[in-house]
Image (cartoon, rainbow, N blue to C red):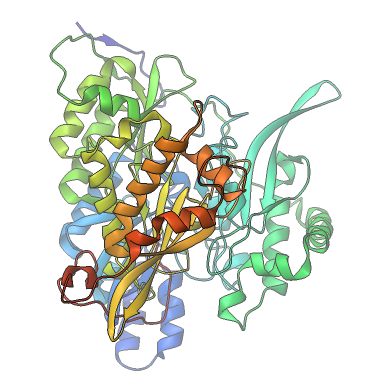
Length: 600
């Protein structure tokens, strides 16, 4: 007989924050009509559309991608069900989980965007400021609150920051987009490659423990990328808001509004120099604290992370489906809460069908003791507070829904941006390549290889790094190349990127034709197996190569390039016509781009 945990008095399936404003949907519908009538010019409409979370779709003004903001990645069962419904009614029957914890609906008729906004308001969601030159979705590590290494749960601070900044006049017309990222610890976040990254920490002063953050400023990925700088040794929690406001104000005042290619905050930090920029921020924070401390506060709900509803603990001992041990090893994380695990549900390049969304909603209700899921940083969905006795049953349910792929916490789950499937700037179908790599890795059971577990593969369809290729162990960004008059899709490959406490950008190695990417990756793994030391992991071995510290036959990136070069020699089109087509295409490759809006 199943036992029951004690119900919580605060048990509820409804989110505590309603992010929506229904009048915005009506205003969007009215503005679309004015645009169609020629009463609003294209550039002004584009700014308005982006501010309301409707992204341009590849080579057309008639369709949009609707990006749904999911602050801190927290998403509830009824919200998943609503997105499933909307994907069938207005989109392509599936949704997409982005690398920034948003949910996206692609190929939406422009006139239907307002209908989606109305329906999102029914479940407390919004697309406002999910795009455009504003503060984007405030991210938070999906392990915040359950991480074994965290000082405290940063989720309440992320949600409070998101609520303070949403629709705030402070950030409605910044020089460029602006990103916050809260982490739980050094390992499980990307705090050094965003505009403002925050890691919780506790310091002791005069015998009293005080909460605060390590704050990193000026990081970011793109055509030119930078790793962020730590502002100060310790920023107390009462200074979190003042620091955030000060940074936004300095960027708003001094950021480059003319040069689109250089108007992210990281360029301002680079051009000014970190020391000067840091002093400006600290002076501006003093001014903000003195002039606004009485009238502004972060509304932080600091209730402890608790199990919010009753859930059965299974005592059944039935047969376990094949593949369970492999799935358990490569997708689950043991929480600091005894007997509970977080399960990383693996998706292919972030795609999830309407039926799978509904299945996830039911699975979340049945298995998560906190009653909601968290979107992750790697195009996945994380189910937390799953009792360890329920893991076999959960696996069976995920198997039925087609969501039981293993490898989400390994190299076998690559990140791929939307690429040519929808983005104006993309040069290659990075979205499809990520799926091809994932399928090949699972076929070869490389997800079970412990030596590969800490490595990553990330793919962008252009140099703008929406697929985060520069912080991957093996990263790729798309382009084109020629043999005579014939073009073929091509990737620039980098090695050695990482995003932990030793964050660094990958080192460029060589160009790899699209249809040779998988053979090249497998060859690198083969070389690792041949040359590794007894205690090596793949990422540690690559790290030594990019720093010139390896003692085997491959001592440098240049050595790696020489060994791999025979694999990337292009055949003639007559000998291998498939080589000249991208994944997902049956026609010869050619480049075609429009005005970019960066739809990762």
